[in-house]
Amino acid sequence: MIHELSEDILYDTIIVGGGPAGLTAGLYCARAKMKTLLLEKGTLGGQIAITDLVENYPGFPEGISGKELTLKFKEQAEKFGLHVVRKEVSKLEKLEKELFLHLRTGEVLRSKTVILAVGSNPRKLGVPGEEEFLNRGVSYCATCDGALFDGVPVAVVGGGDSATQESLFLTRFASKVYLVHRRGQLRAQKHLQEKVLSHDKITFIPNKVVEEIKGGDFVERLVLRDTKDNSLSELPVEGVFIFIGLEPNTGFLKDILELDDNGYIVTDERMRTSLEGVFAAGDCRSGATGQVAVAVGEGCIAAIEAERYIEDKL
Ligand code: NAP
Image 1 (cartoon, rainbow, N blue to C red):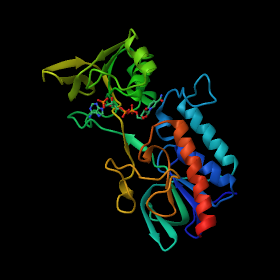
Image 2: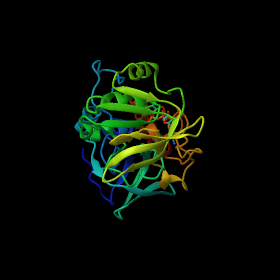
Image 3: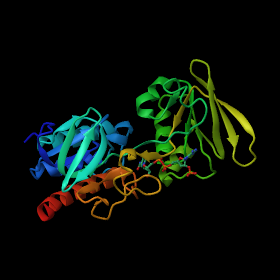
Image 4: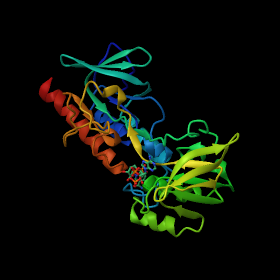
């Protein structure tokens, strides 16, 4: 049961975003024989597509690469007829009981319900050199770019699960990994902290922020400022990987439904947003935990609630 992209179809649900939450919602909706379409503007998998190893998703005791897990999610959803289309949504509207999704390419799709699983993007440091040296030493994805830094020193910025986990991954390539964090205490899960702090290739640099990224053709060094005494120092590195959290991809939704102060979509425990017929799941949702297992669960709830909404209200 394949539903091609068509302006003539009134879909039961359109899912926006193809990470774990969106693909799970897609699996449930397609399996429930709803007229379903999943729109993804970039790469399927969202944040896990750029995660080297997912160690805490149940069912994979040895861990599984983010890419492989995404392929499994996709394969399972497509087996039940989910149709995935590469398109970007620029606007969501509601007229009477119908929802309208405007695509960047001009088409307008109609649906009874919408499931927003738009995820989030890496936060930027916003310092001089960050944009200039993008892809010339500055990266937000160790899985994508780590191998380019074979045998040279790199810095990782951040103190959360991503920064610590990706620091460990980068030790496969880099001669040295400097973990630069703005506080003295890492935020990451304890077992990741322990691994990082005891690793002979990783040096933890606490209480420093990056003031500037400098270099010639490629990154050559970071200017660091000490958060305690404001002193400046330089750290010679050939790459800098920035993992300082995520920002939700919800800019196109701000005028139509309730977002929290940080731009995340507010829902109730049934994944219902402030706009009737619209549900949200995964990392774009207010209170998101950034866990694949949670995103999958929320995608499942959103799909069941969308089906229930159509039965009860339309
Ligand atoms: P995060 O948990 O929000 O951590 C962001 C880190 O960056 C914090 O240490 C923060 O410092 C620092 N930071 C924020 N803004 C900064 C700035 N402007 N300059 C310098 N440092 C800054 O983000 P994340 O590590 O990307 O993780 C996102 C979510 O995904 C989390 O919920 C995480 O648990 C989850 N995740 C889970 C796994 C896993 O389960 N294995 C792996 C990766 C991610 P402070 O500590 O001072 O606030």
